[in-house]
Image 1 (tube, rainbow, N blue to C red):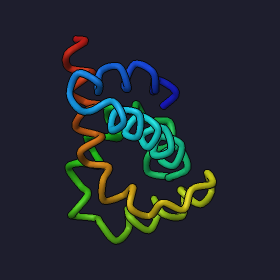
Image 2 (image 1 turned 90 degrees about the horizontal axis):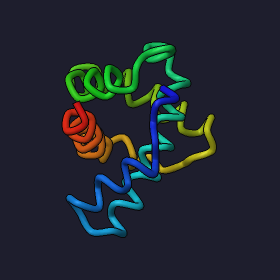
Image 3 (image 1 turned 90 degrees about the vertical axis):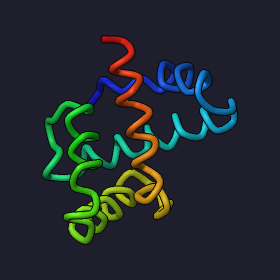
Image 4 (image 1 turned 180 degrees about the vertical axis):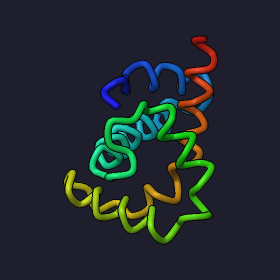
Length: 102
C-alpha cells in the first residue's frame, strides 16, 4: 500500500472540495492507509483493491472490520474512531482519482 501519495491526492481533492477539506481528507487517508497495513486481511494488498473491498464489505462485515480498524488505528498512534465512518467518501474520491489517471 506504499503507493499512496498524499500530495497527489490533496491536489486532486482541491478540484473537488474546499482546500481545507482536501488537506484533511489527504491526511486522514494517510492514517487509514497506515491502519490498513496492520489489518491481516489487507496485508500485502494493492491500495485500490483494499479501498474497493472496504467500500463493498463495510456494512456486511462491519463489526469485524471496524474492530480490526480501530485496533490498527491505535497501533499507528491515532485515536480518531470517526475515521471508520468517514472513510467511504475518502475512499471513493481516491478511487475516482485513480480512474481519472487511467
